[in-house]
Length: 566
Picture (tube, rainbow, N blue to C red):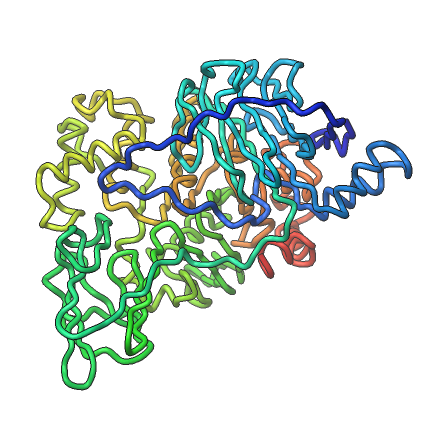
């Protein structure tokens, strides 16, 4: 084992004889009715908050290993062949280890007989296995030596139970998590050893336009089925007319937008962008090219500026990029501009200067078109306390879902969101009888009813004890893994290593850091996140600390990597 620093290690394995292990069959769960489909494996950005960029790992190792050493030989092989690897990180401490996957069989577990040893009580003695078959790697759970594991496995927000067989060919960027009911979380991030491809939208087959009418809606009797809670049963019609094709809104609940404007009927022109819920349709003259953005919303902010009373600066020229399906924490002291930045990103209180893009579209100019794709949970719970959990969700569903949802469909949707927030067993309780953390989960469930692609939360862990704080952050982590982009404001730093990115703001709305949490510690040369707070506070002797912090970050490689060219 080669130690990179106190918190990062790189482990190589000696070649072992091939071991034949039986492969459990694939898991094929029944899909829920209106649940977000499991997103395609995320593109292999070096996963923020977990993985160390390959060039940094290689550079550090090159400086530490003597030429000719066994580790050095392995490293040269890794550099030349771009060896796949697995990063193991733990949200209860800062320990991270990187393992080269260069054996036919690699066992993962808590006990010393494994090649990858994870010293955590939530990991079973033999938990999982990675096997090589020809040129492919497969992760197998549970370990063939056992019939079950203690806490199972999470993949793309789906819980694989301890006794459920799961077998998956590893794809670049795959992330697996193992967690318990108390919020402890171990993350396994697969690095294929290849360069990250250019990010692409999820591909859907184009819709060929012909004579007659083309019906679009949520239910199976449509010619084009868009199965999402934001789409009405019979949402829109495209019909052939003299001179081309005309689109009609079929009295839908959430409307049809063309180039950001709501329309009831309009003759289509080549290049028109049509939005129906989270779906974007581009008219080419002969077909509609369709894109499902429900699991794929990228937020970009450029030069956001805002001033308050007496010209007090609230946001000072902030730029950042939040890739799809990422979990981001906005952190900073009082007056640093956390809530102001979040509300500039979600459009509740837009910035006075600057641009916010959602999937390359000017968000401020298209607020209505994106409205249904956003969920917002304020700091104060707004759930009616005299209702049961289930009844509160039912009334919210009647307001938030299309009017053609049947009672049975609403009931199914309530079942899904209660499962999402782990409140199924408390559905019959009065909201007034719930704890603060449970009420917050119900507030989140209300927003989940419409299945938004982006989620904003203001201090969701405020008032929670450390244990509940961790559980809440773990819950939000799983929601992000299921395909949502999640942004939250928080003062608590104990569990922000659960996030992909952390944004540290200094007084006056100055961006002092944006990037993976563990790299923030290296950037500020601090061992604890709470120490970063103190480092950003101005003092009587050094009143310009916020300005210095902002300038230091803008001139750093981290700014180039995570903001300028993410």
